[in-house]
Image: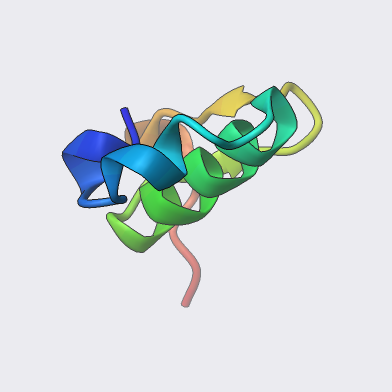
Length: 52
């Protein structure tokens, strides 16, 4: 998954599982994803109330 987000191959495969999760969350949020820290899964963007 990280390689598809332009992380170099050698870096992506040298990370620990915890680091892979952290990078996946960060890069996913940069792409507009919403991570639910309580459930430890991605949120459905249609179910989140709009602020504003």
